[in-house]
Length: 470
Image (cartoon, rainbow, N blue to C red; front, side, top):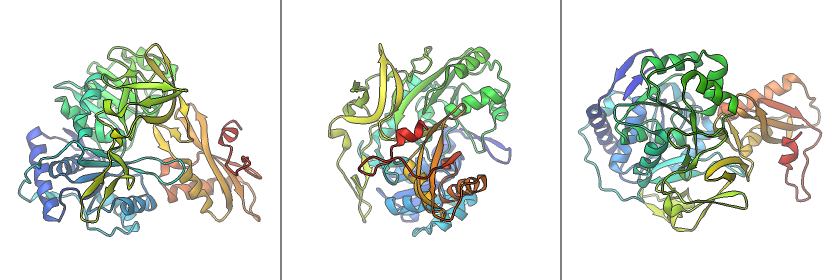
């Protein structure tokens, strides 16, 4: 593992160091009362401490809940209330928001004292023992906690080999921030399964710096969000990078022009892939192949079908399929034990995503529901609308996707004001800042429009399709 810290320092971690440190951290967790089945929440950036905490939990059968640093107190509080963590590990820089969320369990800051205990022995675990919780964006309510079993970890072998294409001796850089579904599997799990080195960079995205690091660290495989590929293509000077062998992206389709720019500059095609928080990765463009706009083919062994335009999955064919939603099929009991009704055993999974096929290549067309995909982030409109309505000037609000050249889509808010308030650019900016404070900043509406009323169905549901077309 290679660590690039915010202060500019660089450190290489050997496999033996990772094993010893994570085992000692597991011992510390046990000393602090964490046992098999208990939840440990992390709010840590892309630092080795995050990866070590994840591995430590996997080692002793604890269930890790990684959270992105972009979450605000409200988001963190909801996750803690749902998952009831036994302990929280948090960066010092995130303590403000975390303390505002009023945790009811102990909070520790990563440091050498966390590695002072004797190494904890690994426990014997079953494929359906819970090991990881990641939260969805939510469309009709609050985000749901997706509970994955131990099978999710070794199940990453399929995409790691056939899509990510990590190989022994490679340096693999997945730039996803800790806390996201993609980060949980591709920042370090998938590379390590294939004998590759994982690169962790704990800093904000900068297009020119991203390319400089790729060249300096001799990155073999680069896994980025589509928006990052778009921004680099427009704002940085792309050129040949001899170390690069593979470029992969997932989350949304890349437009042909961006694909052409990268291919012309690097000689490499960006290979797209598709998956859900619940399923893990299901498709990917095969090695050496890519088709503009396609999310690839079904990965080996994955049984997928298209019914009435919707992608449907046979869960028994997917090793990375989730156990259930937190509190719905996967219940965390007060004593730390879990009651699991494995969703994999309950019939086919309807993804809610509309997909078409050309031969066996698949193309994403949109959501059955109204989730907004912006820069690879999946944003539930309910969260944005709830934040907006909490402002004293807002009577009603609807959040929909609006096309955007760089991000694919951005959040557009259509707002109905209360009596006594008038539309203005100043008020639009005030509402944007309000949403940033209420929830994670990436969810704020980059477009704010005002309306006298929202278009609704006879039953009172907002006609989102009409707003998207407005």
